[in-house]
Length: 288
Ligand code: SF4
Ligand code: SF4
Image (cartoon, helix red, strand yellow):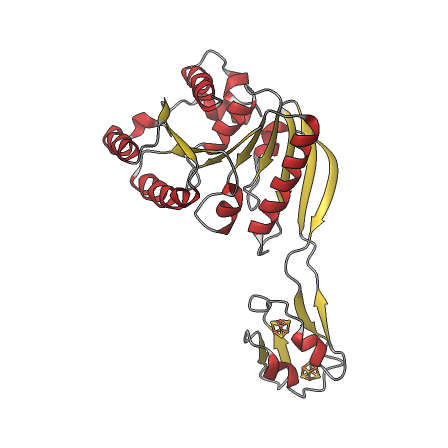
């Protein structure tokens, strides 16, 4: 079984369109949408939800103002400066600073502090016309997206192993932060989708630096290569220098947008388009 993560360093490169296009070609594959903060593969996959789970991110302390006697003990023990005095002399907890260590809860003499376990994060096991898809939905402002990525990848792997799948394809998150690292750990190959713009080049170089630490096989495609031919040449030169095989150059093709609007992949919607033909070639090279 081969596990592949598709990354782009930034949003708006057409990465998900390409992942979905690949999905309509590959056989016997399990998919996971690791972009847990803005999952959108399900919009095209239109899957049936088989199971739904809650992912508990970090607990947050809250003070019951009716019970609190304002002794200040919690303020003294919080190492994360999450507890502050309000103008009226009462105490409050800043949820953005609270690390959920529970020290204040334990020390409070009148049990005025309890821990709140947010249940805004859900993840789903689904079945679609392309195969199983595991994806998540994070509530706004929730943390631990890296852990959520790890959770859904673990489930994708379990399903792939149980069903004897040949591939796992992960649609990765943007950036170079914790969720990206979680989407890369232990995969066999990474496919980079690059847009030839100045920010696109900058972000992909940062991502390549990160990937380099993981010592895995990296491949690249340039999407909308004809929107800036000068930067495209620069990207190609960089890839050559870094020894990353360029396995496809896709021109700007409005069929991608039309296909999305119709909730299809470009391979389904316009099988004879230039983009579809290149996606076929990309997969032939990537699956080897
Ligand atoms: S330790 Fe408890 S009683 Fe004392 S200030 Fe904090 S919440 Fe209020
Ligand atoms: S749980 Fe820990 S971090 Fe959060 S307010 Fe209490 S002492 Fe501070």
